[in-house]
Image 1: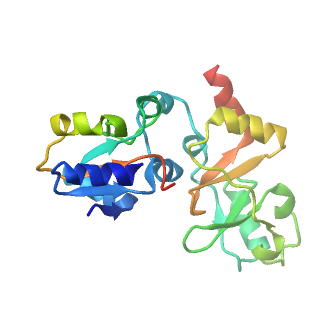
Image 2 (image 1 turned 60 degrees about the vertical axis):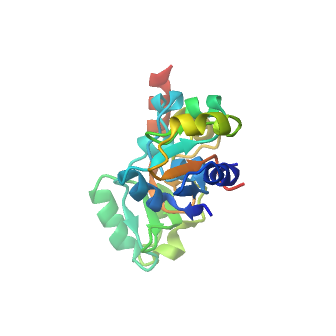
Length: 160
Length: 67
Protein backbone atom coordinates (compact mmCIF):
# COMPACT_ATOMS: atom_id res chain seq x y z
CA UNK A 1 0.00 0.00 0.00
CA UNK A 2 2.75 2.50 0.87
CA UNK A 3 4.51 2.18 -2.54
CA UNK A 4 1.31 3.25 -4.29
CA UNK A 5 0.93 6.16 -1.89
CA UNK A 6 4.55 7.23 -2.43
CA UNK A 7 4.21 7.15 -6.21
CA UNK A 8 0.91 9.02 -6.08
CA UNK A 9 2.41 11.76 -3.91
CA UNK A 10 5.18 12.22 -6.43
CA UNK A 11 2.64 12.52 -9.20
CA UNK A 12 0.84 15.18 -7.15
CA UNK A 13 3.99 17.27 -7.16
CA UNK A 14 5.73 16.30 -3.92
CA UNK A 15 9.42 16.36 -4.70
CA UNK A 16 11.02 14.41 -1.88
CA UNK A 17 9.04 11.26 -1.05
CA UNK A 18 10.28 8.28 0.96
CA UNK A 19 8.73 4.89 1.58
CA UNK A 20 9.39 3.15 4.91
CA UNK A 21 8.67 -0.22 3.36
CA UNK A 22 9.12 -2.35 6.48
CA UNK A 23 6.37 -0.26 8.04
CA UNK A 24 4.68 -0.21 11.41
CA UNK A 25 5.36 -3.88 12.04
CA UNK A 26 9.11 -3.29 11.83
CA UNK A 27 8.87 -0.28 14.14
CA UNK A 28 6.88 -2.14 16.77
CA UNK A 29 9.00 -5.27 16.49
CA UNK A 30 12.00 -3.15 17.40
CA UNK A 31 10.25 -2.22 20.64
CA UNK A 32 9.92 1.43 19.74
CA UNK A 33 7.24 3.66 21.20
CA UNK A 34 3.98 4.22 19.37
CA UNK A 35 1.05 6.56 19.92
CA UNK A 36 -2.63 5.58 19.91
CA UNK A 37 -5.21 3.76 21.99
CA UNK A 38 -3.12 0.60 22.29
CA UNK A 39 -0.13 2.52 23.60
CA UNK A 40 -1.76 2.75 27.02
CA UNK A 41 -1.68 -1.02 27.46
CA UNK A 42 1.61 -2.53 28.64
CA UNK A 43 3.49 -4.70 26.18
CA UNK A 44 6.09 -7.41 26.49
CA UNK A 45 8.98 -5.13 25.56
CA UNK A 46 8.23 -2.62 28.28
CA UNK A 47 7.77 -5.17 31.05
CA UNK A 48 10.71 -7.38 30.09
CA UNK A 49 13.85 -7.14 32.21
CA UNK A 50 16.47 -5.34 30.15
CA UNK A 51 19.16 -6.12 32.70
CA UNK A 52 18.99 -9.89 32.16
CA UNK A 53 22.47 -11.44 32.27
CA UNK A 54 23.91 -12.58 28.96
CA UNK A 55 26.77 -14.88 28.02
CA UNK A 56 28.65 -16.02 24.93
CA UNK A 57 28.63 -19.52 23.45
CA UNK A 58 32.18 -20.32 24.56
CA UNK A 59 31.96 -19.30 28.19
CA UNK A 60 32.29 -21.91 30.92
CA UNK A 61 29.01 -22.67 32.68
CA UNK A 62 30.54 -22.59 36.16
CA UNK A 63 31.88 -19.06 35.62
CA UNK A 64 28.59 -17.82 34.19
CA UNK A 65 26.53 -19.45 36.95
CA UNK A 66 28.60 -17.72 39.63
CA UNK A 67 28.20 -14.34 37.94
CA UNK A 68 24.48 -14.80 37.23
CA UNK A 69 23.51 -15.95 40.72
CA UNK A 70 25.65 -13.27 42.37
CA UNK A 71 23.54 -10.76 40.44
CA UNK A 72 20.36 -12.33 41.84
CA UNK A 73 19.28 -14.08 38.66
CA UNK A 74 18.31 -17.64 37.86
CA UNK A 75 18.44 -17.32 34.07
CA UNK A 76 20.88 -16.21 31.41
CA UNK A 77 20.45 -15.58 27.69
CA UNK A 78 23.16 -16.78 25.28
CA UNK A 79 23.83 -14.24 22.54
CA UNK A 80 26.46 -13.36 19.97
CA UNK A 81 28.25 -10.03 19.54
CA UNK A 82 25.29 -8.72 17.56
CA UNK A 83 22.98 -9.55 20.49
CA UNK A 84 21.20 -12.25 18.47
CA UNK A 85 19.70 -14.88 20.77
CA UNK A 86 21.06 -18.43 20.46
CA UNK A 87 19.88 -20.04 23.65
CA UNK A 88 18.52 -19.74 27.15
CA UNK A 89 19.49 -21.27 30.47
CA UNK A 90 16.94 -21.32 33.24
CA UNK A 91 17.56 -22.70 36.72
CA UNK A 92 17.59 -26.34 35.55
CA UNK A 93 20.25 -25.75 32.89
CA UNK A 94 22.31 -23.53 35.20
CA UNK A 95 22.68 -26.49 37.56
CA UNK A 96 24.39 -28.67 34.95
CA UNK A 97 28.10 -29.67 34.99
CA UNK A 98 30.11 -26.46 35.55
CA UNK A 99 32.73 -27.57 33.03
CA UNK A 100 30.28 -27.46 30.12
CA UNK A 101 30.48 -24.60 27.63
CA UNK A 102 27.36 -22.50 27.31
CA UNK A 103 26.51 -23.94 23.90
CA UNK A 104 26.51 -27.42 25.45
CA UNK A 105 24.42 -26.46 28.45
CA UNK A 106 21.89 -24.09 26.93
CA UNK A 107 18.40 -24.78 25.72
CA UNK A 108 18.94 -23.94 22.02
CA UNK A 109 16.50 -21.97 19.92
CA UNK A 110 14.10 -20.91 22.66
CA UNK A 111 10.70 -19.54 21.67
CA UNK A 112 10.93 -15.79 21.47
CA UNK A 113 8.24 -13.14 21.38
CA UNK A 114 8.06 -9.67 19.86
CA UNK A 115 8.08 -6.56 22.05
CA UNK A 116 4.67 -5.36 20.85
CA UNK A 117 2.73 -8.39 22.12
CA UNK A 118 0.41 -7.34 24.93
CA UNK A 119 1.36 -8.38 28.44
CA UNK A 120 -2.10 -9.86 28.89
CA UNK A 121 -1.52 -12.20 25.94
CA UNK A 122 1.96 -13.04 27.19
CA UNK A 123 0.65 -13.86 30.68
CA UNK A 124 -1.89 -16.26 29.20
CA UNK A 125 0.63 -17.92 26.88
CA UNK A 126 3.36 -18.26 29.50
CA UNK A 127 0.94 -19.68 32.06
CA UNK A 128 -0.56 -22.13 29.57
CA UNK A 129 2.84 -23.38 28.40
CA UNK A 130 4.45 -23.16 31.84
CA UNK A 131 7.21 -20.80 30.69
CA UNK A 132 8.92 -19.25 33.70
CA UNK A 133 10.64 -16.75 31.41
CA UNK A 134 10.75 -15.89 27.71
CA UNK A 135 13.24 -13.86 25.68
CA UNK A 136 11.76 -10.84 23.95
CA UNK A 137 13.52 -10.10 20.67
CA UNK A 138 13.27 -7.83 17.67
CA UNK A 139 12.14 -9.38 14.39
CA UNK A 140 15.79 -9.92 13.44
CA UNK A 141 16.41 -11.92 16.60
CA UNK A 142 18.20 -9.34 18.77
CA UNK A 143 17.59 -9.46 22.49
CA UNK A 144 15.35 -6.79 24.00
CA UNK A 145 14.96 -8.35 27.43
CA UNK A 146 13.71 -11.35 29.37
CA UNK A 147 10.04 -11.42 30.35
CA UNK A 148 9.37 -13.25 33.61
CA UNK A 149 6.05 -15.03 33.93
CA UNK A 150 5.61 -13.53 37.40
CA UNK A 151 5.99 -10.00 35.98
CA UNK A 152 3.61 -10.69 33.09
CA UNK A 153 0.91 -12.13 35.36
CA UNK A 154 1.28 -9.30 37.90
CA UNK A 155 1.11 -6.50 35.32
CA UNK A 156 -1.76 -8.15 33.42
CA UNK A 157 -3.64 -8.46 36.72
CA UNK A 158 -3.09 -4.78 37.52
CA UNK A 159 -4.71 -3.85 34.21
CA UNK A 160 -8.04 -5.46 35.03
CA UNK B 1 11.01 7.83 -7.99
CA UNK B 2 10.26 7.36 -4.26
CA UNK B 3 13.21 6.24 -2.17
CA UNK B 4 12.87 3.20 0.05
CA UNK B 5 14.25 3.77 3.55
CA UNK B 6 14.81 1.77 6.72
CA UNK B 7 14.07 2.57 10.35
CA UNK B 8 17.28 4.48 11.01
CA UNK B 9 16.90 6.59 7.90
CA UNK B 10 13.34 7.36 8.95
CA UNK B 11 14.53 8.65 12.33
CA UNK B 12 17.14 10.87 10.68
CA UNK B 13 14.64 12.30 8.20
CA UNK B 14 12.07 13.02 10.91
CA UNK B 15 14.74 14.82 12.93
CA UNK B 16 15.37 16.94 9.83
CA UNK B 17 11.68 17.86 9.64
CA UNK B 18 10.18 15.21 7.37
CA UNK B 19 6.42 14.70 7.50
CA UNK B 20 5.37 11.20 8.52
CA UNK B 21 2.20 9.78 6.98
CA UNK B 22 0.44 6.53 7.80
CA UNK B 23 -1.69 5.45 4.84
CA UNK B 24 -3.64 2.71 6.63
CA UNK B 25 -7.35 3.10 7.46
CA UNK B 26 -8.23 5.39 10.36
CA UNK B 27 -9.12 2.63 12.84
CA UNK B 28 -5.69 1.05 12.47
CA UNK B 29 -4.03 4.43 12.84
CA UNK B 30 -6.00 5.16 15.99
CA UNK B 31 -4.81 1.96 17.65
CA UNK B 32 -1.11 2.43 16.94
CA UNK B 33 0.94 4.82 14.87
CA UNK B 34 4.48 6.09 14.81
CA UNK B 35 5.09 9.13 17.01
CA UNK B 36 4.11 12.31 15.23
CA UNK B 37 2.55 10.57 12.22
CA UNK B 38 -0.61 11.89 10.63
CA UNK B 39 -3.20 9.69 8.96
CA UNK B 40 -3.96 9.99 5.26
CA UNK B 41 -5.58 6.71 4.19
CA UNK B 42 -4.73 5.79 0.63
CA UNK B 43 -8.27 6.51 -0.56
CA UNK B 44 -8.13 10.04 0.84
CA UNK B 45 -4.64 10.78 -0.40
CA UNK B 46 -5.66 12.51 -3.60
CA UNK B 47 -8.08 14.88 -1.93
CA UNK B 48 -6.28 15.50 1.36
CA UNK B 49 -2.55 15.38 0.62
CA UNK B 50 -2.32 18.69 -1.16
CA UNK B 51 -4.29 20.48 1.56
CA UNK B 52 -2.54 18.77 4.47
CA UNK B 53 1.09 18.30 3.52
CA UNK B 54 3.85 20.83 2.93
CA UNK B 55 5.35 20.31 -0.52
CA UNK B 56 8.61 21.94 0.51
CA UNK B 57 9.39 19.30 3.15
CA UNK B 58 10.19 15.61 2.71
CA UNK B 59 7.29 13.17 3.11
CA UNK B 60 7.63 9.63 4.46
CA UNK B 61 4.78 7.19 3.93
CA UNK B 62 4.34 3.83 5.59
CA UNK B 63 1.72 1.13 6.08
CA UNK B 64 1.80 -2.11 8.08
CA UNK B 65 4.66 -3.97 6.37
CA UNK B 66 6.21 -4.68 2.99
CA UNK B 67 3.54 -7.21 1.98
